[in-house]
Length: 547
Image (cartoon, rainbow, N blue to C red; front, side):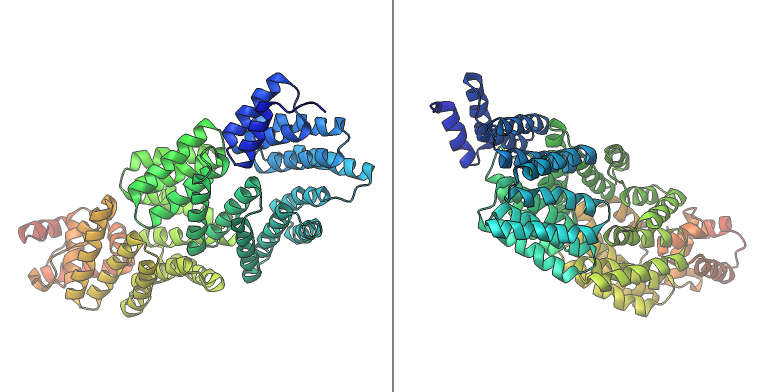
């Protein structure tokens, strides 16, 4: 037997310690001295993947596959074929190449007549492909079969990955409680140890994504924090760190840590620019764009949304909301309606519906907004998770306010505020307080309205939410003061907006009421003040200090 070189020994030791960069360096150095054994080539291939060098990893896995064949080890050759099939499918999106490696691995085991754990592994890419193609009913039993093979051979990785696939399939089949229970079981398994790094990384990222699709913020945050700790313990790790940074940026944005969210998204973007991965680069750009939009840095936000789109990540609903903030209301309305029409997956549809209600109300489409809010409420009732419940209550309250039912609106909005507060989402909570303030005004409770709007203003100032502050400034008039000409507080507010050059549609959007309601206010203003034109109304507003 050929003696093991120091470099090989050091490479194996580093690999066992999960020091992936050192493992790769030592094994590459050893290869300069002599040919590596098949198992060491497999270690080198996996270390290359875990340090983000996917092209090198694929080449080395192919070499390891040939080395196993040369040594007459069909199981090892099939195992390498499995990883090549998985990485071709998950990283490159190359279904044909994945199928080729899968068929080769299967043929090797069939020719050798082997009953081994690798047969279970080879089931996973086929099941994944079925799930990606929407054939979930076929994917589930295949994942289940793989997991049972893992149990028979006591193979921790296969058991975890099979169970992960079962849980994801159940979610897509609408069996949410069962699916969630299986995903929780997967996470218990991977955090308990005994599962390889690549299987742990796949499980973390898949479960976090499913949590976010289902608006399950609590689980998404819990597992993102665990993933962050796991990544931090392996400084050389690249693939799963990218996803972790993007997920962290999204959660930070919701919690109002906007500067930190920008920084995390920037780190994710810079990391993936070194190791190309379009999907997560696009995700990083989208998270940056969202914060930039909320801070009023519209040109930078638009550039980031465009970069996300170029990398294959939909820039919606953020881009439509940007168009609304830019005053391009019709463009916003057209874009969001198209997105809602095309969205079929429940989580994506719910995400679009929340923005759709806001945009439709801003463009006077109150009846359409009511339909969208009702659908959103139905989805929220079905999934029953706090984040989606908050979004649905927020949308419902806004619609009720636009319909003129201030009392019912106030009830929904107070529940929405409680939900956002408990989720520690200060920006959304402040936006709800603005609506609560408007509802209080309609009910004649001017002191409460003033308190709500002042509280919202303070949060917007702390966050640096410039667009929200500007909208609040436009809508705020001295409350409790006597209005000239016998005008009500709301009529004085409408007159101030007329003087600012706003059309009835723009006033309706600003006050979240219908154009019909605005027209009635305008008619009352003209009658009370004896005016006959908007220019005369503007002059009156200037003369009486209403600006």
